[in-house]
Image 1 (spheres, each protein chain N blue to C red):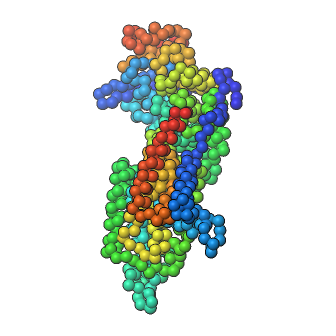
Image 2: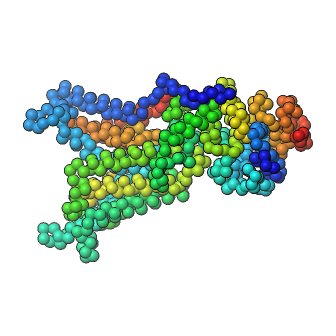
Image 3: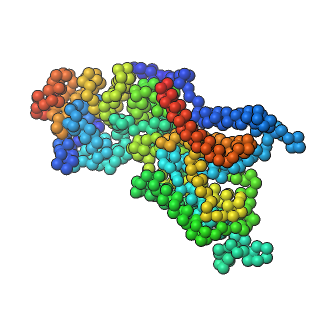
Length: 358
Length: 255
């Protein structure tokens, strides 16, 4: 604190106005959800949701279930990371699911083996050209190029023609799905090389998802890129007046979202050992839902990758919990819908409360 | 000429047939606080927009810091040292105070293009220093602007001008939307700037405030400068006469 002739300046810390991070509430929701499933399980099924109740395997927790919870959301989770940074800038990306479809088809056709059981691979599109048994880096680079291109088109449309992101990415959603079907005339492509199949094997999707999540959490918090994402999302005019190059930044944001969707396509097609034109349908909405549940504001400027990761875990817990309670999958969808809307209502309510206290 | 910070000659702006600003001759000296007054639509904001490069003038010349200038945009003007506190404040609501102060000119540790690592420690320290220098009091630096009162937001916007070595600060009605206490706080900041010898242009409708804070009052009416008076040589009634047009003719500064 320093004294100038006209009053004291500086920071006066006021403990009453201390606020805990928004992610804490999302985490609390996750814990409550797990507790609910645990209680219902104990009371009605006599089984535990979280803990190990079998004597033939070791460990305190039911590790198989914990793995499934995160494994089943990790591929959509990779997309959700990209979608989160798009939403933080005040945009939206509806094209990621279709980018997954198109990229899976194209990348898979560059990851084909030459022979299947001694016969020439019937699915290999480039058998005549001899583009088979290529090193894994080739389909990977092809996938990244696909995602980059799709993101570039999205970003350029939004930045230069100033059409709403909803429309631009809706166009890309339909177009990319068309490309996915056209690429092999609707035929699925199977028989990937062993090295390509290794990308999505076992718990690899989880490892890839969490590594990317940590990387992007750091980027969003500690780099100029992240700071400008939040600035553009919270007040685009202010960002422009401050000298931030809005158009360039937006293009980069959508390019990164496209590349992450393409990486999700690689992991998914590798895990399934096949690519189909219908892959990734509705993934964009699941990804947006994960972000929204995780506290990312659709009006931009607020949210974090950590929040989205917790949001994706809430998704995973719901799916696993319903399976655990032996309830039909129909109920999952219904409850998912309620939770998405509930999360947004709660978030707005909390924001108003905070604004009143300030 | 050497102590003149800003000078305009015959500055004119027309929007089609509308003469928003006609032949404005204006001078600002080092350490001087000048008020711009006038009715709505008198040309005050138009005048400021020409200086800060937000709009391009129709004709006339501007000298700033000894050189003739031609700003293509507000960023160029800011780089040259003209800091403006806009009526709209131009703050990002979801960012904390240091991020807002350094918005668009972040200090980085490693330069990796867009992925440059921010020097958060430095920016925090510089923010605290700027708050001290402007006598702005903020409860918590990590709080986002969204959770601050109108007065605090205004103070942050003003502190931003003091973070960087600015040569001229322009404030466009900084207290228009504030309560009594908050207005007093902002006025104290302006006094601190005066003590630090920072030149300032203040657009205001508040007569008491203008007489309290400024050395000289320039009155705009219908796009023209109709009065340029030292505060000692005038009073509220006199100024009102010029604003309303009861008194006309360019009253020159009796220097």
